[in-house]
Picture 1 (cartoon, one colour):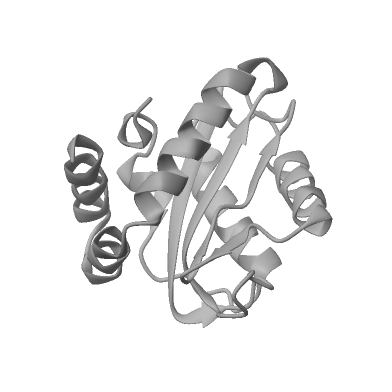
Picture 2 (tube, rainbow, N blue to C red):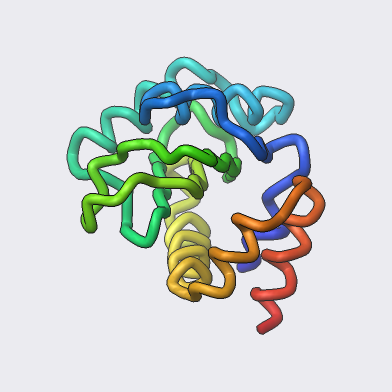
Length: 152
C-alpha cells in the first residue's frame, strides 16, 4: 500500500501555526475536512488525542504519526503537517517534532491501516527521506518525495 495514494495536496500543511500537540492535530484534521471520508472531525480529533494519551506517537528523529481507528472516518485518511520550530510530542528521544503524519481509519480497515502505518514508519526511518520532506517547499513536492522514496 502506498501512502502517496491517500495523501492529497490539500491535506498537507507546510507551515503549521500550532505550537502544541493538540493544536497541530486539530490543524491537520481541519485540512482533512474537505474529504467525504472524514465523517466527524471533532470525534476524530478526540479519538486521536485519546490514543495519544495511551502513549506518544512521537517516534523519534523529529517525527510523529498520531493516529486512531475510529468510526469518525470512512475508509482511510492521512494528512501531513510540518512545523519549522518543532512541537513537543513527548517523543521517545525527547526531541521536538517537525514532521507529522495524521492518520485515521475506520475499524473495518485494520489491515490497510496497519500496512500503511508500517510503510510510512519504514520510509521515515530513512534520514534522506526526512531531510527531503524538511526541504520541500510545496505540498506537491512532499507528495513527489513520498512517491520517489516509495519506489526506492
